[in-house]
Length: 185
Image (cartoon, rainbow, N blue to C red; front, top):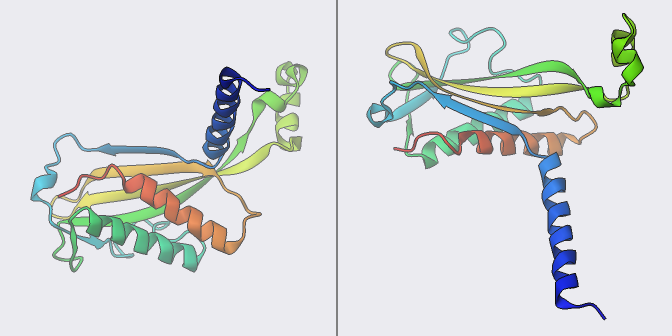
C-alpha cells in the first residue's frame, strides 16, 4: 500500500518530468526596449516596406510561415491596443528576420578529441549532435526617428523533421511568446 508521502513524491516526480519535457520544446526568448522610448505616445503600427527593410527581412523561406508570423504579430499588436495604419503614417514599423546558425552539443564529443589539435573540428562535423539553430527576431522601429525601440528574439533548434503544419504552429507559438512583453497601450 502506498502512503500519502510516497504518492506525493510520485506526483512530484511526474510533475518534474512534465516540466522538463515541456522545457525541451520551449524557445529561449529575450526582449529589450530602448530606455528612452515613450510607448505611451505610440498608437499605430505597420509593416516596414520590403524596400526599406534589410535584405533578409520578412522571408523565412516559407510563404506559409511568413503569413503566420504576419498574422500572429498583427493579432498581438491589436491585443496590446495598437491599430494598423499605412506605413507612411504609422507610429511604429515592424519587421522580422530568421537567422540560422550551426550548433553542436560539445558534451557528446570525447574529451581527447577536444584537446588534440585539429581533431576537435573533425569531431564537431562528424557529430550526430550537430544541428541548425534558428533565431527569429522581431524589430519595432519608431517611424518618425527611424530608431529601433523594441526587439525580441526566440531561439531554438530548427526541426526539419516536423510536418509543415507543426512548423507553422511553432512559428506562431514563438511570436506569441516574443510579444508577451511588448508594452501595451
